[in-house]
Image 1 (cartoon, rainbow over the protein chains, first blue to last red):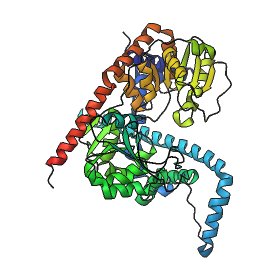
Image 2: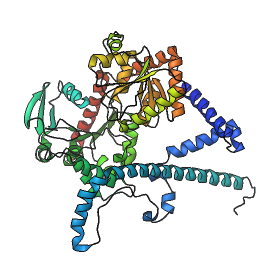
Image 3: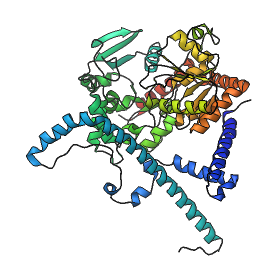
Image 4: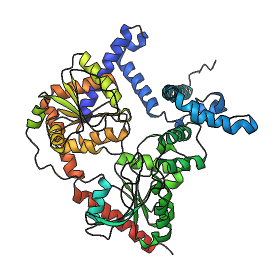
Length: 149
Length: 378
């Protein structure tokens, strides 16, 4: 009797093995020759992706002022030219923007993708930091020296 | 449609009034129906005029602003709900002045202005049906307070309940997961004749709905062409109006909008339904396919779709092009197992999504909220 979880487990195992073989063939680390280790790495990275929503990430907190690193994808119409600001903003919003909308939307879509990748990379680094911290703690508890250099 | 059917069925046991707008088009919100009271399908309907149509460019720019990671001021987020519309001030005024005359008020879809601005006006008797998806709107900063204000909640799936409760910061009670109501298909084995007239091959996989980038169709077309390039041998049939340029490919057939008879035959004779959407609060089309005993292949990035398929044992899911190829190949190569998955899907619909079961859950919640209200201190 077909069961979704069972079939998916078989298929995901097969896909993982295909990916692993291709990575090794293209010169990836020899560590990936071990299918069991590869499965662990795959699971760890998948878990990181699952937890990549911005509110669950530590790195943005540590990076400091968001204006120095965060991708700004929205256009805000401003001018610093005092009394002339209103007509300048009007021209930007009503004349230039309609002309440039296609370019803006193309750029914005790409920035959105970059933002998504940044979040996933933040999540992966966070997951690796958690694993490292756990391993250090286990080593300390086992009485073996931990090199912090 | 779901809201309309529920109102109609509830009206056999309750005195139901539908408060809505004069709009027909959910994109522009242009007034199309006359304002005032009428009776439709035996249900009293009170329509209120929309003050102005939606300005799509201004709405897109405001969406960019409020969905930016940096967040936006609460006033700008509220402005987003107003811009999303439909902006019906008379409807809100009706709730403000006459809301207390209703025992309970169900608000359908949190993202629209009447629900967002109307619910707080009658929060003590408001039941929210959020129809929430894990899209950028759910992360707006003003929502946790809003979600916590209703007197009761009706969710479409367990995943939606988790999503909205997480945003509210606590379990939302009282609540029921109700899904939707579906009638059993009268004919599970309709003739293939209408499909033959369209020149469709004996074996095909089906996408049914709007062919749109936001529905994951661009990725589906990409993955499917990769599947064919790798030696896959089936046809993808797209049934629905398209906003995408569909590639001229011998294995892709775009039918555009189809009549009910064709739709029924497509569901019944497809090897599988593909649901590529990354955002769904339920996916009625998935339940319709199962209602015909047809298995599904869904986008695993959508937790609701993956959750539904796993609960039903009614299909497979994919997260990448490789998984798409493997899962589709498996479904097409294992006919007995594929039919079994479809049968599981049908059994799931029989178990969870028939009208009596769904209405019983709704009635339970209505009773519980009413009971709480009657025993609450004045």
